[in-house]
Length: 376
Ligand code: GDP
Ligand code: MN
Image (cartoon, rainbow, N blue to C red):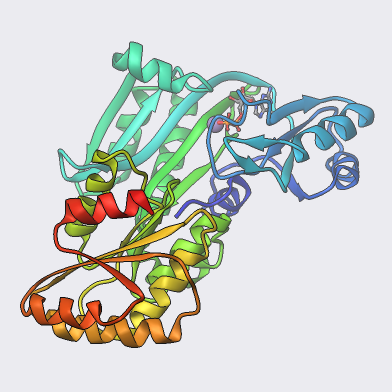
């Protein structure tokens, strides 16, 4: 789960990591008022959306007068960045930046540990730096049993800041960022840029934290920060019902038992020139209520014009599945064509049951099912 910059900065503050004074605003009038309250000559207005690259998209502006503050705020609040509408902006005191550094903790699967990454070439072009001059990014694996004691934090800090005073400050920031990472079960904690100010202090200008979804149950406070897009809400809702659902752009709704079979179904549709509307694994069992819920989920998407149900009856027998489907579709009010491909234990009995029910078109192979879906 991602959180917004302003939320990440609140967490940083709790850990004593320096961030600028700031206010969150939803209107241009609020931005102007915030400018007055902050009281500096310049402020930065930053779009709060759950994606990077805001600066390059025009979502970060430094302003030094009220008129510009109002205009830029209006501008940014009206834009979308990578498809995400900007509803909130952060207004911060503008920092006099002498240099921009990159610092981040993430998980390195190769070394099976947390890795610290740092660079003196931080800022908006860090991806380019990583691609073209990877040697400019320093990496240290953190031993989980040792963590980041003072001597190591200082050692790492010195590789970026040769000067004692700054290295000392950096060492503390590294330790606190690592604490943020571990204590909150994060998968990424990133500061880009970490700014060196004209006065020689260090300050987190940007803040990014991604949390491990599987550990969110341990952090109700963090879970409450979640700000889902409409599409993510549908997916989260599906997860609560025990489904694994991913929305896609096509028009063939898929309802499948098993993740592997669900992917194979999508492949088969694609292979024959169609486009799946979703990935949906409803899991095992012949419970008709599950099918009813799954149909509701598929029909929420107005693009769906046909539904392909692909079920392998192994432990759950096909005759049971067929009965479940018949009961379910007695409860579902929709005329959308439904193609069923049912195979496995007792498949002949199952298919016979479905054939007696006008609601279903029956396919025996996956290819046949995909072609039928394409024709409807
Ligand atoms: P991102 O593009 O989404 O990563 O947004 P950032 O918060 O990192 O901002 C992008 C860039 O805006 C930074 O790399 C800085 O160069 C610049 N910037 C942000 N805040 C300030 C500030 O307070 N003062 C100055 N001078 N530049 C800033
Ligand atoms: Mn940034």
